[in-house]
Length: 139
Image 1 (cartoon, one colour):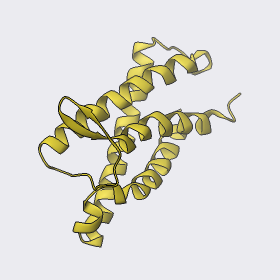
Image 2: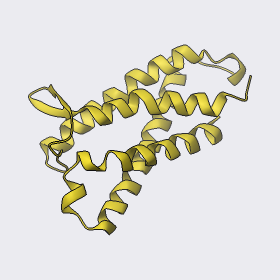
Image 3: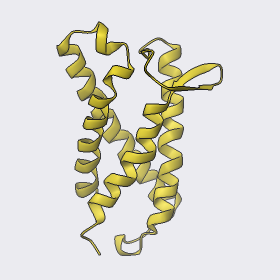
Image 4: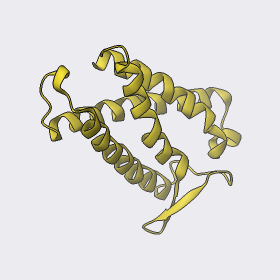
């Protein structure tokens, strides 16, 4: 399953990372080489986060053989795990000023910190779509 899911997740994530570049100050402040590195770095991180979210969903859901996976439960757990990690990561990285949002980033306030909606939306949309694309020919 991972051999189908992870390529879709990485491919969709790299597109998302590129599209959301203007929402970060990096887009205007860094060299093109560093922007390319940041996209590659973030996409690799997305693939890792997505793999761990799927693994944890399978463990927490006590899933057995692939044929008996309860897809709604798996997706529901991933829709909690991915955004939860993203909230923590965005909060921590903006607090430590590892990255900053441009004025274009829509935000919500969490624990006194503006958190970008684009990264949260990514984890609500991309992993379920990647799972759908990875499993559409399995039935």
